[in-house]
Length: 193
Image (cartoon, rainbow, N blue to C red; front, side):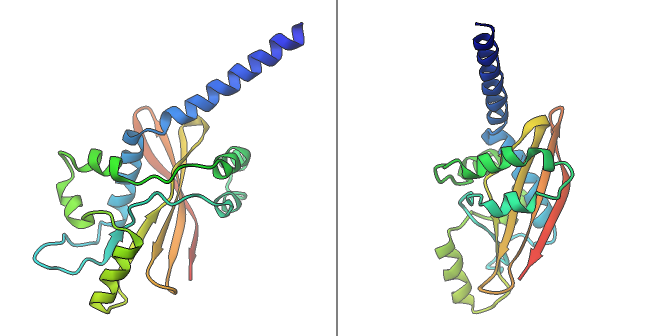
C-alpha cells in the first residue's frame, strides 16, 4: 500500500517536471531565442534593399534533432547530467514545424531593421534556385534546429550553415532563462567542413 502511494507520487512528480519543460516550449520563448541567434549572426549583414544580393538566408523549417546533438553534449559540464533528457527528446518523434509563428511574433511590430536583413524564411529548393540564379558560392543558409528545453531554465539549440556540398559549419548553443530573460550561456562543439 505504501509502495503504491510512493510510486503514484513519483509518477505525478515526473509528469509535472515534464510539463514544466514543455511549458517553456512556447512560440514566445522560441521567438526570443530566435531573436538572440538572428541578432548574433545577422549583425554583419546588410539590409536587403534595391536588388542587393542576399548572402545569408534563413531556413523555414525547424530542423529535426539527431543523436549527433546528444553525442556532442557528452563532455559539456552543464549538460552531462542532462544527457538522458536530451536523448529522450531527440528520440521522441515530432511533427515537422516551421519558424513561421516565431517570425510573426518577432516581426509583427518590432525589429524591422533586423527583418530587412533576414527577409522571409526559405525552403531548401528556394535557396538552391537563388544560388544557381546568381552563380556565386558566397550565399549561405542558416538552419536552426528544434529547441530542446531542459530543467533549470536551460535550452539547447543546434545552428548550422549550409553553403553547398562543401564549406558548411555549425555549433551548439546553450541558453538559460533567468527571471524573464533568456541569455546565451555557451556556444560549443563548433565544426566546419
